[in-house]
Image (cartoon, rainbow, N blue to C red):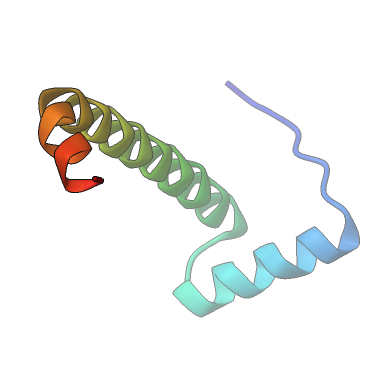
Length: 67
């Protein structure tokens, strides 16, 4: 699907710098940035979920350690 992306001049400069640094097109730099953010958010969500499970599982131990 085609999409028009409107960027400020500052954002356009940053995108151009990213693309040039990686030797890729601005389109590819945009796609990579989208994928990197999605992966990071997925990782953060998994870490948050794992932390919640560990806190629930070890709540009594954590409570005793806190005293």
